[in-house]
Image (cartoon, rainbow, N blue to C red; front, top):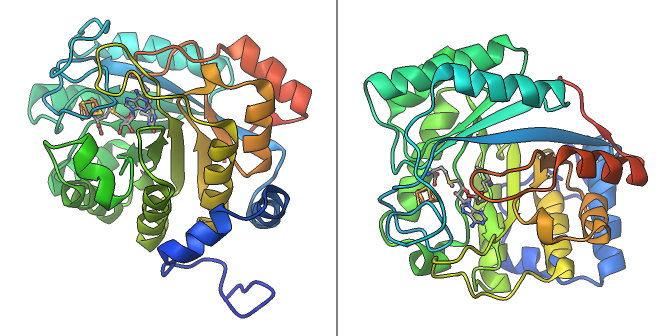
Length: 325
Ligand code: SAM
Ligand code: DTB
Ligand code: SF4
C-alpha cells in the first residue's frame, strides 16, 4: 500500500469532513505544496486533458436545479432544442478532435434518460464518437441499471453525474430528486464498468463545510471517480442563483487543491466558469492540481473560452494537451 511520510495511505475512502477542512484552510503555500506533491506522484504536471462539450438535447428539463438555465421551472435566454441527429453530433465531434480534444462529452437536459428510439440514437452517437478515436462521455440524467449496461456495450468511456454540493445543502438547490438518487445512478455506472465523472459547483451559497462534505462523499466512493469536475457557477439570468456573487479565485484554488489531495489519482477538471477567470487564476488552479478543462466556444448553453485563447494560455504556462491514453 502506498503511504505518505507517516503511515496513512494516500488513497483513502475514510476522509472526515474536519480533516478535509483542515487541509482546505491551510496557509496557501502549504496547501499548494501538498497538492503539488500528490499531483506529481500520480500525474504528469505538464499535461492537461482537453474535453469538448455538446448539448445534444437542450432545455425543457423537469428538474428544478437552481443553477441551471435548462430547467423548465425558470425563464432563461436558452433556446430549447430536441435531440440532435447523429450526423450533427459527429460533425461537432470531428471538429473537436481536429482541434485537439481527446474526449467528447454529450449532455442532455433530461431528468432521466428515456427508453426507446431516443436512447437508441444516443447509443449510436456513442459508438460513432468512439469510432473517431475519441473518448466518449455522456450526461443524460438518471439511468437504470440496464441503460448503464447498454451505454457500456456501445463503448461509452465515462458518465458524468454530479453530486453538485454536500448532502446537507443539496435540498436548498434541488427539490425534485435526492442525493440518494444521484448515488444510485453512480453505482449503476460503476457496475457497468463505465468510468465515473462526478463533481460539483462552487458559488451557490454553500458553506466551506458543504464543500468539504462534497469531497468527503466523493472520496467515499470506491474506487474514486476517475474525473472530478469542479465548476464555478455560471450565473444565468432567470435562474434563482443569477445574483450570487462570483466565486473568489483563491477559494476556487483551495477547492481544487483539496480535491487533488483527497482524490490523488482523479483527473480534476477546472470546468465551468473559466470565462470569468483570469489567466493567473487558471494558472493557480493548474498548480493546485487541475489537469483537465473543457475547451471550445461553448459549454452546454453558456460561453467558454475559445480554443485559440486556451492554446495561448497553455503555451504561456508551458503546458500541453494530453494525448489519448
Ligand atoms: N441533466 C443532466 C444532469 O443534471 O445530470 C445532465 C446535464 S446537466 C446541465 C450537467 C451538470 O452541469 C450539472 O450536474 C451541473 O453540475 C452542471 N451545471 C449546470 N448548470 C450549471 C451552471 N449554471 N454553472 C455551473 N455548472 C452547471
Ligand atoms: C460538468 O461538471 N460541467 C459541464 C459538464 N459537467 C456537463 C456542464 C457545465 C454547464 C454550464 C452551464 C451551461 O453551459 O449550460
Ligand atoms: Fe439542468 Fe440537468 Fe438539473 Fe435538468 S437535471 S435542470 S439539465 S442540471
